[in-house]
Image (cartoon, rainbow, N blue to C red; front, side, top):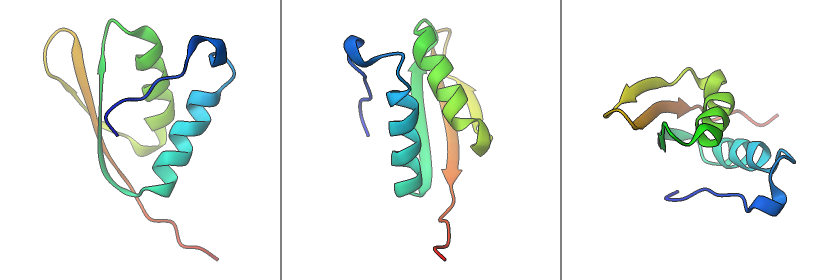
Length: 77
């Protein structure tokens, strides 16, 4: 995934949270998510979505942060 955005008219309805969680659960494996520290909405979104995965946090510079984590495959019952 190269880009992730929710248009302003659809914001504050938890669509971003729901979509990000759905994408991650449908695509297990190793992930890296990068965001700009100045984008407070992106920082809040990704830190909320990824909290259960306990990502490694890498500050590339003063404005770029990368979260590295792995989504495990869930067994279907």
